[in-house]
Structures are given as C-alpha cells and as structure tokens.
Image 1 (tube, rainbow, N blue to C red):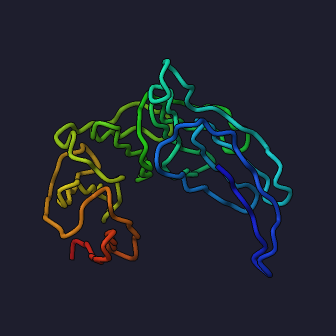
Image 2: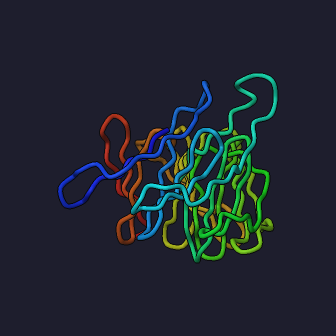
Amino acid sequence: GKVSAYSTADGSFQWSYAANLPSLTLRGTSTPFVNEAYTYAGFANGKIVAIDNQTGGVVWQKAISLPKGRSEIERLVDIDGAVNLVDGLLYVTGYQGNLVAMDALTGSVVWQQPVSSAASALMLGKAVIVIDESGVILAYDAKQGYVLWQNETLKYRGLSAPMELDSKVLVLDASGHAHLLNLDDGAIIGRTKLGVSGPQVGSLRYQDAIFLLSLDGDLTRLGLK
C-alpha cells in the first residue's frame, strides 16, 4: 500500500505515499501510471490517488468502489489492474466495484459501469476491454461507456488480462489455450494451445508479437506471422 519515488540521477529517496488498507486484500498490486506531472495509483481500499511527482503531495483521491456487506470477503474492493491514461481520461477497474473513466486532472467521474474485475483493462481503438470475475469479456465505448459487445463463451476458464495482437483481442485461459477475438463484435476468430497457462504468465508486447513468460521459466513468442 505504499508508493515511493527515487531520483533517477543518484537513487536518493524523494517521497512516499502510504494508503490505509483493509485487513483482508486480494493477492496482487495495481501498476501505477506515471507521466511528467503526476503518479496515478490504485489501492486495495478501492481508491485511486493522483500524486504530484515533485512534492509527493496528494492532488486528488477518489473512491471508485465502496465496501459493501458484513464479512471481510464481501467488502473486498481492491484495485489490482493497471491504471490506464488515454486522451486525458483515466480508466480503472475494481474488484466487486466498477469500471470508471475519470478526468485525469480533477478526478471527476466521466462515466462508470458496474463491473467486478481484478485484471487490467485493455485500451484498444475506441474500446475498453474488460474481463469480469466470472470470465465474461466486455467491450465498452471509451468516451461514453456504453456496452459495445460481450462474449460469454469463455466463462469460468480462468482468463488472463486481455492483450492486443494485431488490433485484435487476445486472452489466455488456465488450460493454456490462447483465444483471439475480433475487436468489432467480440467473436472468437482463432485458438491455439500453448505451453503456458493464462493466470500464471507475464506478458510483454514487442513489435508485432507478444512474449509470454510462465512461472516455471518457459518463454513463448506469440504472433500472427
């Protein structure tokens, strides 16, 4: 629950911000988004915070998900997915919460949809692609937030966060299958069996391919050519 900044010149400590976290959280940490002015970070208390890069002071903070229910499990509202910034709008997903688009300068909400997800959203074209906790793949209009399409054929298959491959949507499932979806309507247009499984891989896009690294050290290059 802490964000710290260090000098790129000599590694000296600059500032830190610590969030108040609940006693029970998901196993995972959101990746902050950093630009020249601010650091945007999401936390397990359901809040996203904008921090001034020079001073470490809080510019604004906003709760995108509020705890509900009596048990600690019911009240989980972690933000574990990466924070995305596109054309002045921040896009954030929360577990047992919402998908929210907000103004990056003020934190004001532009639109929100009730979606529970612990994975990062994918910004692709004019769409925001999200996989909810049951494995439904949803596409929302990035500017207005309405649903473009949804695909329920891969529910309960332990999907990874969505990735982009040649302007198409790629997801991996827990059994090691890669599924390629059409961005226009969400239809599955390709599938292949890999040697790595979805939730256990790290991914990095480079040029026209995606490189996948599994927990046991297997490296896979995935491309369409």
